[in-house]
Length: 379
Ligand SMILES: *Cc1c(COP(=O)(O)O)cnc(C)c1O
Image (cartoon, rainbow, N blue to C red; front, side, top):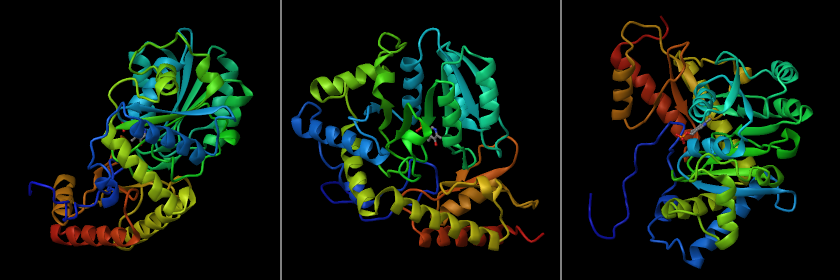
């Protein structure tokens, strides 16, 4: 490592993970500044980012929506919605088919918020008919929370079909779109979303530091006085931005600077449609390549999204995940462990600054590693 003003010249190992992700050099370089959190130049960037997020979501302030940035990782944004958006008498129905749905349940337990969980197996999407039946028999439910792309497996849940059910029962709809916003088109009105949560370091390709919540203003305004937490009080955070353009407490300044650049690069790529096209191609190149070397995805293709893919461990006595991971990393590629309880899998993400050539390269590294280990996938 050199000291002084030289820029990084080496390339870090690409991250085939669900975030933080490989970012462009220009996104990293955007952070080489010290921004004053009070200063009008920084506040103007925050204002512009909030506008840009509303536009990306296809909603507007005139149409009744607003965008709130909140310090912390994505989990903090989801927890803020529950901590401040659910009344003391509220009850949340959580749709869960993976670790992030289960994390919502933990948040509700910690906050002592009444809740009910509607589970499907990790390879089965959330069930709108089951939700309809639940809401019909349990009128105490006030909120429904779902995860769009459940990063645990890479499954994509039917947020529009669920949303129609939520709306027909007049409940508040919370969507964790952490690993899909920016890469999947999401129609707010068709889905009837009241709160959507995502974060800086997923498909927008910024760096970690904050989450953001795009919410229906009338729904948020009705939450005054409900917050169980000061730092996670969403309405207060929004009022802070409205009052003086500032985060209430120290903002992640470098992360905001990186995000501004990441949004510009998303535009250059053709917005959500352009990014979706690259990720879809990445996913196809990956899955086809892995299939060619005898490795298969865990999910049925019909429910597999194009963000991250779980691959089943080769059934061979010489396969050992820690050794495999280390060898692939030594070749320069960072994979991700599986998180599924029902199957032995590892994951390969194809989001972030990755291209089809990177996907081909990681497949080659996997093939070489299996050969080195003496793992025969044809067995
Ligand atoms: C990444 C992710 C989160 C948030 O995780 P953090 O580690 O807090 O950023 C939440 N939900 C989903 C679906 C995610 O992919």
